[in-house]
Amino acid sequence: IPKYELVEASVVGEKKNVGLVRLNRPKALNALCDALVSDLAQAVTLLEKSPSIGAIVITGSEKAFAAGADIKEMKDTSFASNVNVGLLQEWDKISACKKPIIAAVNGYALGGGCELAMMCDIIYAGDKARFGQPEVTIGTIPGAGGTQRIARSCGKSKAMEICLSGNPFTAEEAERMGLVSKIFPADKLVDEAVKLAEKIASHSPLIIALCKESVKKAFETSLNEGLSFEKRIFHATFSTNDQKEGMQAFVEKRAPKFTNS
Ligand code: CO8
Image (cartoon, rainbow, N blue to C red; front, side, top):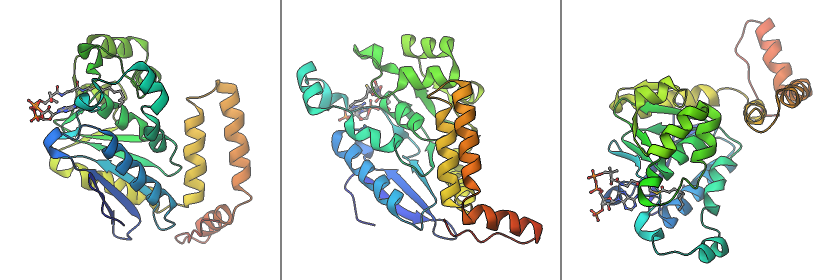
């Protein structure tokens, strides 16, 4: 794995099947400047393409997952330059990744930091994490999915309260509203996220990619459309070697050996 300037990427887990990407711009609390997002997107793309990697964990430091988009970098840009340069384009690579991504959030996850966590598939939080969408306090609105993803995962009232007030909220509140799936002591968080990633990576990557695609569909379509999409994908899994192997192994009371085919 190459060295990046603003993220540290490594391969972890007992079977070396988990990619760990750590945002590493401590002086600015991991504010998401273009260079950092570009490094992050490159690292995630590389791990997505690596056949041995089954899941990815994105984390920051104990003080900050990410304190938002870089306010100093964007404050003097214009509407025209934002449109022309395509501000935010690189971010889409995270949400387009076919492999599961777990955000392990310690400390601040504000603005674009909270949005980055929500682009991931699962959010685990440290007990002192602080989430929020403070954009309205600096004269703008969430621009990387905050208004849309909070509304979809927590409903209208919570989304409005969070986005319109700009007030931060705790890990407990985030868990209660369904944004976060589990909370751990800050120093155990990354290990727990890696453990979950290892569990995911122990399954067939092919089947996991199909399963992820199917859950994502729930946020894009009506229930009936989603159910029929799911059913077709379910049917399609029966054309794979890994379905045959998985069910055969169950019958023979042994562990399956998946071949990603
Ligand atoms: N951008 C740039 N620099 C930042 C940011 C940021 N978002 N957050 C912190 N920093 C810098 C500070 O300027 C400071 O630098 P310096 O030492 O050079 O002055 C350093 O990080 C440490 O920060 P503080 O001294 O402020 O640390 P505190 O512990 O006192 O406070 C806070 C921590 C509460 C997190 C505070 O830093 C803060 O409020 N940060 C800004 C949070 C925020 O408003 N985030 C939202 C940004 S807007 C956004 O994300 C829009 C998303 C839309 C998509 C993005 C497209 C590009």
